[in-house]
Image (tube, rainbow, N blue to C red; front, side, top):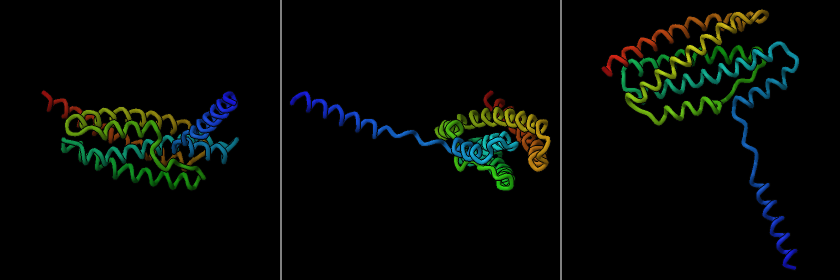
Length: 192
């Protein structure tokens, strides 16, 4: 009898444990990539769709960090740069969404896990600490984006719409990098 009761107890514990361990929900970028993969099996646009998901995720981060810079930044230049990021990247995001709709590409609806971590990290900073970290993230991000856009511009052959958007976006990204580097120099001078 004791053995039977103990066995039933163990079985119930196993059942409760296995029921409570639900799989972690997929992040927004994973969902978008899965939907695109299902739609575009053996399709030329599949690689471009993955790239567009990545770019859309980064673009959303630029917008959210821009809003945060307006609120948490100390330097006027950082606040102004943040405002510009919101304006410019909202426009780039709308263009990307329009292009994605035309190409039947699903874009993420929210920040992915990696970009969300960056957002959380900067959300906990204010003043000069925020400025310093924000500037660093913006420099790194824009350098990476420019390389990715340049590479994509060289790689695209058949899709004239995507190539035109990528090519038109590059000067904007380069101007952002130039401006944030100048802000970084001013920030360094202020510490001295």
